[in-house]
Image (cartoon, rainbow, N blue to C red):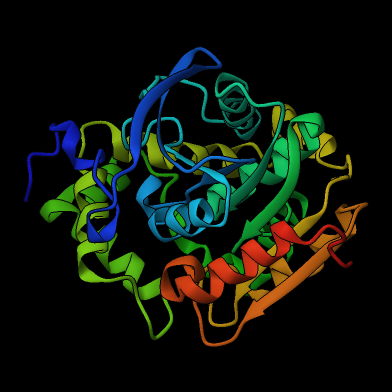
Length: 311
């Protein structure tokens, strides 16, 4: 495998040789790597675990061709972004996101988040509503729905067994980087439907996870999510998440997602006081934007262009 210390591991071009602009922006006391393509209204894409900005390679091209400024950022501690010793609670990570919007010189953005990125997109829309024009969330319920499912739904708790495993010190980091990130590839394939991401993409995720300190930073948000369930800071955060989302929201989910049950995600619209659209992709798993990029991008772009998205 390529030397993971080499920045070229994450600063790569899109498929078919299409080039993106790679640069770093400062926000919320840290430096964030972004990949950018196109001009127009800003659409900011937030990846999930165990990935980096490359998860949005198909959507970057599709959004740029549709007349948008498409930007995919690496979350704190991942890809080409800073690996800070602290700051992995969702409130601070959401401020990273809104800080990047400001650093890009834009008044607002349409936020698109998958998995952990979706959790942060929900959070940013509630905390900084003036900076979020529209919200699209993939494979992730609203934070309060997530908390309720983890505490009350035995099947969802079992599906998130990997999160409980992350609570151990140091063991998860060693497992994620062992054998050149072999576990990363296994997780992506196990969590996908019949159409898993291509082998080249899986290899890119394995390489990125092996960049020093990435594995530790990748599991820290999940440690906070579990350990804070009964702590004052966690109670305060979930109280803040009672604040409704007041921007048009698109909620996308794969019917075969083994990580986030459809039952857990459905119903998140109760926290949205704006047009809310639920879209279930039949036959897709946890990564619908990669498993069927054409169908996913078409759904997303049609919704972004719709001046009156339905409820």
